[in-house]
Length: 320
Image 1 (spheres, helix red, strand yellow):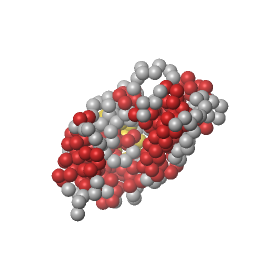
Image 2 (cartoon, helix red, strand yellow):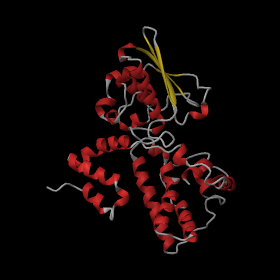
Image 3 (spheres, one colour):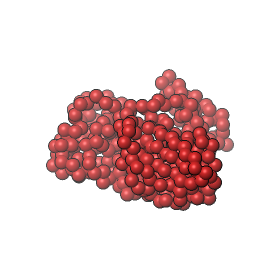
Image 4 (cartoon, one colour):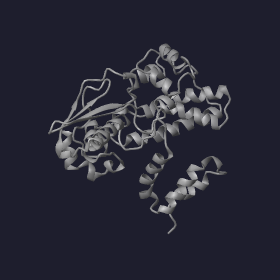
């Protein structure tokens, strides 16, 4: 549903988390509440008229994370309201001055046609959905992966790099801060992803730390990043992918192409990668390795739980 609504909107003025995902959350909550079709429709309509977050805030601060929680809350509230008989116009998505026109700048009727075209023929969870296995903006994950591959395969040391050239369909400029100084800047700096991948022959959660963001070697390599000619072969295969070429001072060149970053549905998602992310992010929170491993084991076997409290108890504050 999110993919269908997103593709029907031409101009995402508002944050995707605040204004597209809460109808999706409403559907999920409505299914859990076992609402009938009429109330399901009202849950969607009520969520569509719930305001969300501004993309300008999401792109420059941790308001992005706030928007994710906001979308979940608004979706659940819409489903609960529909369950209790609250009603909104069922045509609010495609109505004049409705959801599509106000939030997307697309003619309402056209938006409605786009959303309902060929339902079930393709699934966003297969074509575009991914688990973020490294920090920062997902559109730049393949840049770091390809850069790291090229540097590692070519055994290229940072001091030997002459240039780092990135090529991907539609990629014509280095957006975001060229030399980021904090987490928000790093998350939106494609140059940082490329330079960090080359510098360390890898890209991981470590690259979201203050020490790495300020790393002098990475910043020296940032100044060697340039945009190449967009690819003309296999263009359709690039799903937020990229081709990176590293040229060295002694004339060598090493190229790597990543069509889709690790963790995408189309390339397969491995539990080992998910486990590594969980351990990296939860260790500082849970503090005890045994609690990390115990909670991870519960997540692996979640379908067999009789009550979610078995997981919640492990995620709570440790006993003093």
